[in-house]
Amino acid sequence: MGKLFGTDGVRGVANTELTPELAFRLGRTATYWFGRDVEKPKFIIGRDTRLSGQMLEAALAAGICSAGGEAVLAGVVPTPAVAFLAQKLDAQAGVVISASHNPYPDNGIKFFAGTGYKLPDAIEDELEKLVLAQKDELPRPVADQVGSISHRHELIDDYIDYICNTVKANFAGLKIVIDCANGAAYEVGPAVFRRLGADVVVINDQPNGVNINRECGSTHLSGLQKAVVAHRADLGIGHDGDADRCLAVDENGAVVDGDQIMVICTLALIKQGKLPDNTLVATVMSNIGLHQAIKRAGGKVVVTPVGDRYVLEAMLNCGYCLGGEQSGHIIFSEHSTTGDGVLTAVQLVSAVAGTGRKLSDLAAVMTRFPQLLVNIRVKSKAGWQENANIAAAIREAEDILGENGRVLVRASGTEPLIRVMAEGPCQEELERLVHTVAAVVRKELEG
Image (cartoon, rainbow, N blue to C red):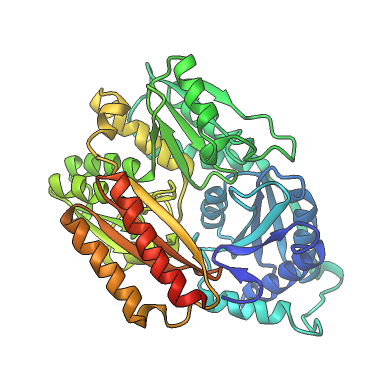
């Protein structure tokens, strides 16, 4: 991981870590990089609702113009809308200004290639070298070669059309509560479901720049749960700040997580004969109940490390069309190049409408086993996998759980932490096993 680009673009507190000066340099650098073989490279820029977004948008667009590029400002739109529009408009790249589910003082800048896919690490490394160069020696065009800025928020309608056209079902007769997290879904989410015929109740759709993700959306579902029950709705959808993921709530107010959403959509696709090799791609964090439900339905699960990039890589390499994470970041590759919360919500509701059953019934196909996660802060993560005492503690816990559970120990990619997670039918047993393994890790690596 570089100094600037992390696992999901450049992130930091806006105006201290992620400054307008840095945004300007990123704009200049990206324009130079993507414009090596193209005159006036085009960039589609979208942002979420946080206060610092306009500041960073202005700086980024100025940097693009200073290097001779064309900045197309789509305004507040979901992250996946930028990936879609970059493809549709034959742009050289798309840029998202968002910190997703983080609190509003944070922000981020993330690039998509013109294909709609996230940039490979190698290209991010090249961009980083140019941005961090001591002297800016990139070209500065003059006269009619200076770039331009256009405001094109109406492009949001193209994205809405695209989402609606991914399903044939009509949602008439369904009442749906949508929690927009005061974020990027506040226009698109309600518009899509109303277009598809649903009776829509909307909450947290009044962004003011500082209330994005605040006690709402997919990371704080209690408000959505109460609203679904109060309105006697069929289900609820909770988005995060940039609308690239979603979670759901059934008619009783119970949470339906990303694993359950994937199971429901997987079974629907298997029934329709539309799931290649009857295979779902999921990460190591997905619940064992997901694996059991897919197996009972005659399907298979390919497991990847944590991170949507690994999920997408497996999907593209093997031709699979559905994959995702427990967090609700789900990729339907037949329709999209990245995780899309609005698209996921539409596919989920289409599966519900297609069966005529309640969401609670469909979610019950998967038994969600208890999970327990403990983070151990260590002096160094180096060599933990070769430590004999840690390995022995893990094996002993695995033997106790047998086929009805599992133990997962992994190092954090960004912090000096070892994460110990266990999963199984008995919460008390999990607590005992996790804390036993954690104690060994702590003893071996803290000293």
